[in-house]
Image (cartoon, rainbow, N blue to C red; front, side):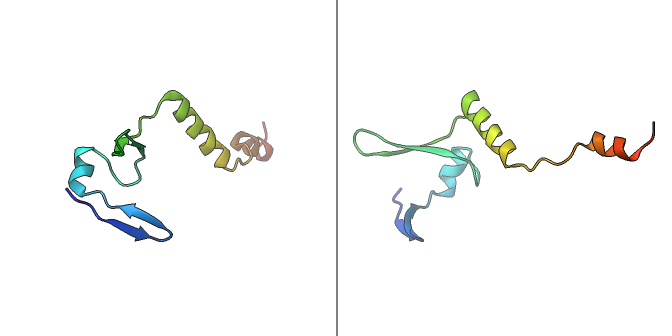
Length: 81
């Protein structure tokens, strides 16, 4: 299948046909790994998440969340025992 390279903002892009996406079992916002073979072929594979990568993603997500006050502390400060 021939695919045309198009301009997308300041970059260039390839549109991947839906049939390929379905065969690869990918969906919008999934991550892929792109590599070049020694003969210049572009290889696109679904990204495999290992424990180290998953742990890093979890740390980044937690760091991006704003931590509030403890719910238990809020309840204790407003209640009598």
